[in-house]
Length: 276
Image (cartoon, rainbow, N blue to C red; front, side, top):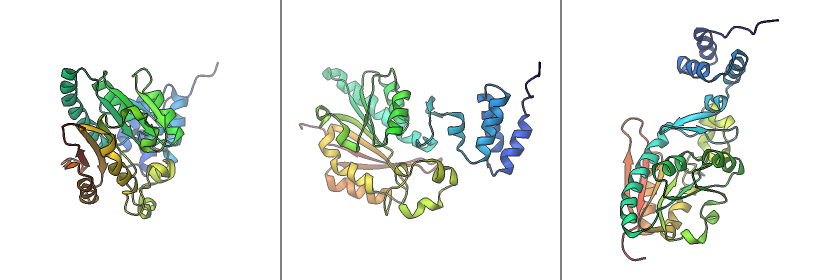
């Protein structure tokens, strides 16, 4: 009976990945070796990665804020930089939960442009009593997010931003997050092939200056946020001043936070507390 072919060594895999242009060949080789079920699967995964398919899609998952998030072909891969948005949203959610518990209410959380559902997974795990709604316009993303959020109690909805939400949460949203597309249209062709060729354009293209969808989210946020509620939205550092000005024009209070480690920027818009 023939024996299965031996598994290639880490050094051999690293050499193949490096020759294909991988900047983190050793790290990627370690991930592939750990994830492959057998030598045949490992060879198939290495072949896929060498052709340029993103590592996360080859493996089928990515680590995000300590959670294993399933990713699928045609769905935006959650980036490590978005952990700033998720972690700050958790902090704000915990503060709101303390206040809401005193009033006997469960906080309402909405994640727009949810993609794989990574941010919604983090928020659901951080506050199991929260009523979480994850929304995306792409049915493929909705299917992927539904799998990642299965058993959490979160609702995953397909639609265009707020139009997918039930009217019962209008004016009641405690935490609203959005990692919406913010790459200017003309700059998409400058992106790495992994993103440009293997991720949906609808998850990348933010219009002429990258802020088309952000403006729509910000403009309607006052109608959906509860008094004292927060909108957290990821942008680039150069886009943040423009979006912060848009926030100010809605009457919401604005803040901009940045990660010193990787330069990630999040604009936070807050509805003043008080009576609706």
